Length: 293
Image 1 (cartoon, rainbow, N blue to C red):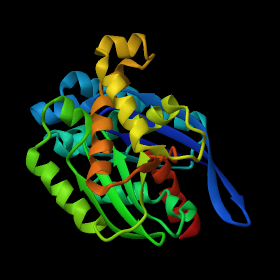
Image 2: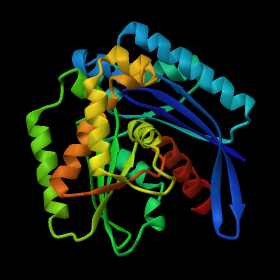
Image 3: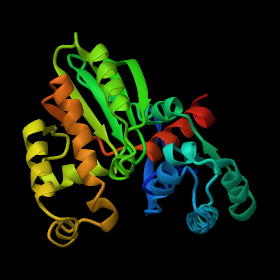
């Protein structure tokens, strides 16, 4: 069996095709194919509150390609979700109709809370240390999803309109930062041994650049040093000297700022990077709904 997940994000659009596995512990999956296309829908959505005809055309082409790949791979179930950029685009509903007609893809625009729940479907809490509490931080182009775990149980989760593209476009609001700070302090102030868990393309890249061993956390000092180094280069230098993709070289700076700010507010010294994200959560959700339900 093969399932597919499509994540229409504010920075990139991703397709994950996964082979479903089964053993005595239950169902899981193995990643088969991952395709990422940096469409940057957020630039349109956050500045103009609608997606431009050119970007709609690119999205239709991308989704048509995804549909063809899913057919070739004989995918039996898929779920396509759009997040922050499409939530804010006034022409979101039109785009959904167009994608259904031209690419035969059913796209669902999901609310922030459902986005947080899908990311939570990765159930990373199963591998957590029960003696620690965790702040789970998923940074995207348009929003940041936060969850607090105590004794491996989710205590609270919330989505905030603070993301990398939004910051680059100067569309992040002071009151949203204040709201995020108040929320995170409320839910973490009494927690001892608080650690972070970071997901999203930027923290995955930072972890790879850090040279840390698999399963080891990235500490605050190291992340801060990397941020200062990256910030000392121009965008061009980050592409040429640091060998970053063009669509990663700019967003990695605001992503660092979000992670570091949250770590400062909560006193978190270490952040674990399990290399999962929205598409992994969607596959897990499909398994829960179709095989375990």
